[in-house]
Amino acid sequence: MTISTTGPIGPTNPAGDGSPLPTRARPTASRPLARAIIIKAALLGVAADVLLRPGLTGLGFLLWMVLAVTTAVSLLWRSEWRVSAETSGWLAVPVLAAAGMAWRDAELLQLADFAAVLGALVLAAISVDDATRAIFTARLRDLLVATARVLGAVAAGVAPLLRPALGGASAQPEMRSRITAGVRAALITAALALVFGGLLSAADPVFATFVRLPKIDVGEAISHMILIGLFTWLSAGWSRAALVSGVGAPMAERLPVAVSRSDVTAALGTLAVLFALYVVAQLGWLFGGERFLHDRVGLTAAQYARHGFFEMVWVVMLALPVLLVTRAALKADPGDVRIHTMLSLPIVALLALMIVSAALRMRLYVQYFGLTTERIYPMVFMAWLAFVL
View 1 (cartoon, rainbow, N blue to C red):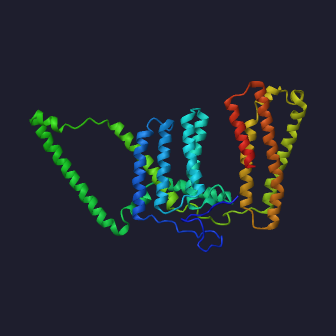
View 2 (cartoon, rainbow, N blue to C red; view 1 turned 180 degrees about the vertical axis):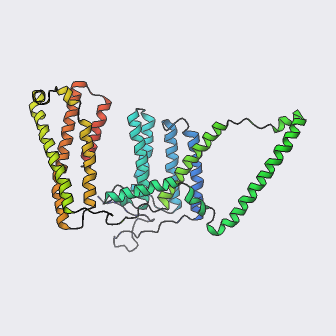
View 3 (cartoon, helix red, strand yellow; view 1 turned 90 degrees about the horizontal axis):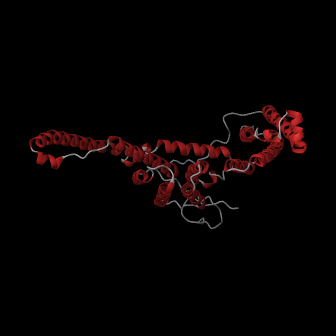
């Protein structure tokens, strides 16, 4: 499978030799781009206030997500970036997940769909910079670092865009004087209107009907401002992460910490022995059945099926980071790498057997207590863990 890594406009290299396209420099936060991001983020904030007040469910969230994706594509085109297949795919996922949230209101499905929306938006921002540093990255830590950079840019929101939007340092004194003059004029106008308008209103009830101020629910107004401001902030932060900040820039080749061959042997050797003993223990109930369980631990098959499933899932989830971190922190020595591989392969195989054991235990549980949606989700999750392995 060929993965496109093109960022500039145009599908082929001008040299015509089939080599990858030259990497185009990322656009800087110029005044027009910064203003465009802020304006479109503000429009998304207003749209969020209109569509999302009932909550992040239903057709409102789907419509807002369509607007957000359309806005993202328009900003990419404005910056003269070609929307790659990877970026298009990641931008389509939030729309599909939002449609799923509008279609089914089951709590677990809503949570899974919302997680898919957030994850796909992060990967879309990374893939704009470099598609090979999204899910197709060669090193998981590059993906984690890029994800942290996207989240940092979203947290910073619109703040880093204000200075370039105002014209940079050279235009700041002039802009500051304009803002000061506008604020001073507004204060003078408000003070005179309140004082003299109040006196004239008290003098003539007919005049009072002309200048009567509308009743404003302060709490409702504040809630509108918070919702608009929040989604403006988040939308501007995501746009800056995708277009300006360079979240996909590669990190250092080496981790700041290193482990030795003895460390790897001790850690992975311990896991291999523990996992092997656990798999051997599973053979007893698998082949001995309920009689073995009753003689060994005094439990019926139904009682045994209700224990240990989620603990085994946690073991698989925690063992994978151990393998990845020890490999990433290993010294660049062929012998150390070979030792790590020799110890990792049995662990992965044992983890796969533990997933099979967990699936069989869930099957036993379903046999005694029936099939429900709450028991389907763990099976799907285990299938995903098997795919990761």
